[in-house]
Image 1 (tube, rainbow, N blue to C red):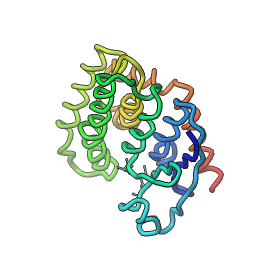
Image 2: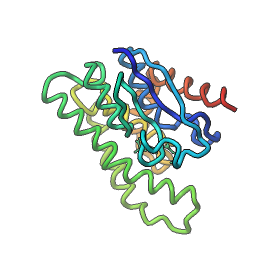
Image 3: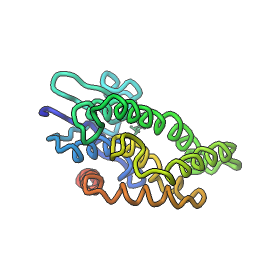
Image 4: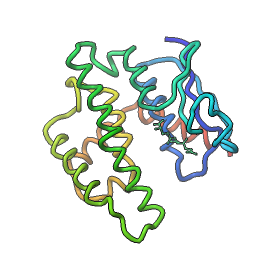
Length: 207
Ligand SMILES: N[C@@H](CCC(=O)N[C@@H](CS)C(=O)NCC(=O)O)C(=O)O
């Protein structure tokens, strides 16, 4: 696969480093052994300077030859369709992978992000606590019974789920040993480590 470009910001403050979502695409490319390069859009003026590529003024985007897509989940599915390292080829394994990929985004991240936002902005009361607890408890039950979410192998669904669950505040919310072990096991993967260090080095080089 050639011509893959992962787009991110040219700089971010220290807080989000290691968590900017281009890491998801870097990680998937590393897992699959795809060649890719990284390009940037300016942090200053990001709200409007690349709306033609990302209609919400965010990153990442993924260029593949002559087209480009936004949304990290869409980028991951795009990459997964090209490598069985990221998604099994059999219809059941593929369906399961897509199901858990959407679940990571639409059942877990859709709760963790607003919960986290209320936490870090110091809202006097976080009304999302019960919702968050329930979702994390269900994930704990699932992860207590299986090694991988889909297809009996590591897939982009695990990549995405772990990228959502590895946020420190989320992990500090209650004691869930199966979830802890899962996050530790997946973030130990060399492809994650490389993607993480590359992102940290990228932003450090822009200081
Ligand atoms: N749903 C989007 C979310 C993208 C997103 O939140 N991007 C963050 C970086 S991780 C961003 O660009 N933040 C800058 C901003 O919103 O101004 C995706 O998964 O691609």
